[in-house]
Length: 380
Image 1 (tube, helix red, strand yellow):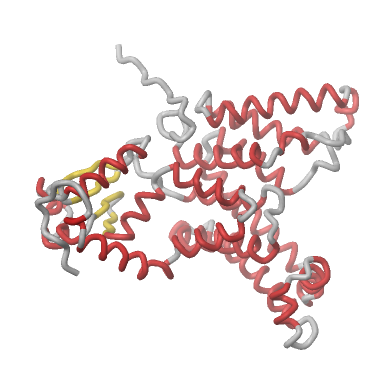
Image 2: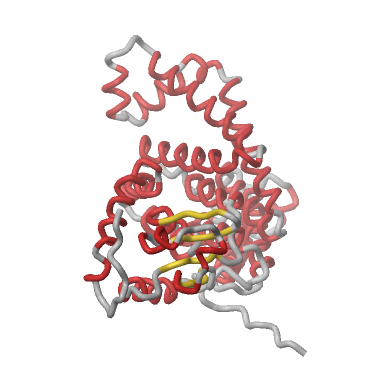
């Protein structure tokens, strides 16, 4: 009889744990952010239940029990212990906390609990529907609010409550409420548009980018993550990602620098997503890539899609869970606004020409960069 492979205790691994890697990664990122923001101390404080029968439970005992279960399930999830059950328990803990405290209640907490619960059920389709519903509800709520349509809400929020410098500078050059109305209707249109984009499969890529841009814009504008909304909404984008079981990297096996790069990537590719194949094996012919092109740059083939150079390196990074944990760490830090701006720029199409130029510079000089090399310098 075949012996089942042991599930890794390494929190940076997301394969082989009994849940789709993209859903497990989403759940882990939410759990990590909950722990890093010390969310456990809020559970549920004060004890003011929505549901009458909860009043019969001693408040302190209920809170401490909920906190212990919360911590236990979050840690178990991160370390790949019974990940489905851990997701279910963590999600139900947050939903129970919402029901047990009118003061604790918040849309962001209910959303986090729902995402974890649906991930535990392995219902990727339901996670996607939930994100579409959240955006539709938010957009519709604003559309029906006269203050949002008139710009009054945005004016009061941005100018008087936040005292947002850029808003004040631009608003002072316009008639009253014009800027508030523009931004209010932009928000309404964006939220309703994203709800539709998440429903139509061929629009998922654009909707994911729109979600990340919208949430990042809110962070940059306000400096606020709205407790867990920013982290949970961006992490939920992973439910729309087609995570590869295996991706093929075609590289120059005669290049010392290329082999060093391969060894570095393999050290951190804990889930073994990337299969490195030297161009000298004739792998390029299987995908219709000319050998002259393979000598110029690295190629990545996954799911029938082919990309090269800087675009391939970016995609390789995005197929590695470690990348997301690093980004989460940067976005949890006090300088999160700068982190969000830099990460957006790096992964956006705007940076592609700069990244490609840097890649080509390294490729042309790779024979001088280390290790024994029999490769020809790249010509671009």
